[in-house]
Image (tube, rainbow, N blue to C red):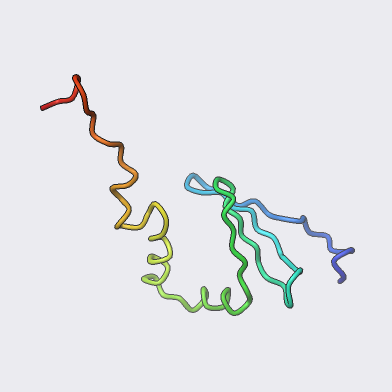
Length: 92
């Protein structure tokens, strides 16, 4: 079926209480890739079929490591906590 006659939406919105992503097929490169865009930050990634197939072969530890990025990376945990109060009203 050609892209002009395809009966699927241009993108799918997948969300839960933790995240929301827009998923679509990008056919502008040498071969089709999956485009995944974070709705909150507009960050995106293009995934080739070999990258998607590798997800199927990953074990639970691999998948857990994928979640340890950005603000969820252990080394950055303190970056996201508010600074302690300073000045006249600060506790001593």
